[in-house]
Length: 450
Image 1 (cartoon, rainbow, N blue to C red):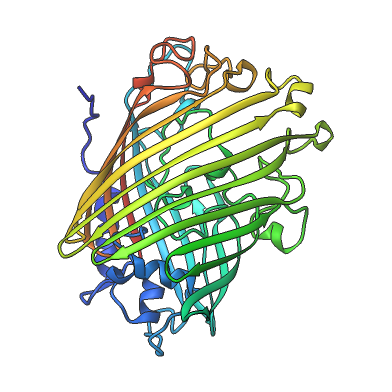
Image 2 (image 1 turned 45 degrees about the vertical axis):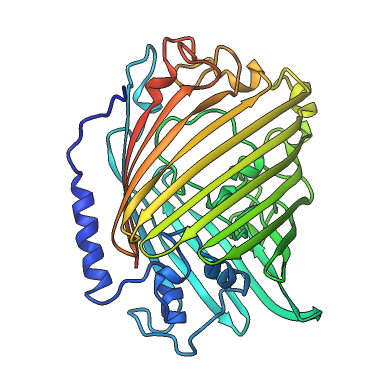
């Protein structure tokens, strides 16, 4: 039986919905406002329910965010492709009663917060070039950051038998951010983090390096069938790229270039679309971001993913899955006494399904699991809540979320996360009596674009 905390609807939720009513107006609402003004299309053309893309949305992204009706619609921002977002949230953890735990272990628990507030540049720059850039305030970490940076140029040709080759180049700040499917880490459910306690382990390609590195990628889609992308990411010491978010002051600093690859096959027929693919990276990461003399550890991530979509009126169904395997070499950390094992692995699997009716009501469910090599020096902090007496990265559980969209640019969500295993154990995982289920959490979210 799920122990749901009892809560009244927070005041911020009502306030944000009223704000959305004032900013979206009485006319037709649009989910990605600046891009919708540029194309003159409804949000449903590009999104099932934002931020998930439809087949046309994938084409719009691949063509450099540059498709246009020829006349940018006026807004309070004039004809600039500018948009804003606001997210308000509340996280309630099932139990905070653990021996030795303090308020610092649950700093945002049972508190309504502005989780994010920021500005987008979303749309055409000139000709076949465009961008999706988000600079925002993170209310969980209490910092401003370049959340997304994807500036691209695209074109197309028909070099072989009249089959279109769509190609482009992008400068971006996260592996998988450039991807067009809803199954890779940057765009997969749950889309928004919570302030709840999180497991200790995550692979590099699974958003560990989000906003901490940057670099160019080239991509191509042949005959609307085969999609490929290769890129090189790096950390930078100073200059423009540091200002854009991938400076050396970050937690994970990559030495030299970090290659990234992506390959997928897709097929569309009527309301159905399918995609199967693989992606990965290789990186040398300094053992300590503030002491490069310790040397680097090596990571090799390779992954497989798949997606199925059914889009009709009024039903939308999406299923997706990803499997990530990371091979780790901890030479530098072992030498520095920060790790026990030189060779280790970490494996993550997620499988989810999501349904919406009339793009207003819906939700989804996801099963997730991570397993890997035990290492007490890396995974056991020796502290309540965050520790692991097994020295293990293993965790598994479920997420379920229900959504209501009163307008296409406003999403209200309620999510519940429950763990069957956390940091390697089901019971007393931290050595202070805390169970995995104590980290179950209820998450309320209001997400507004305008």
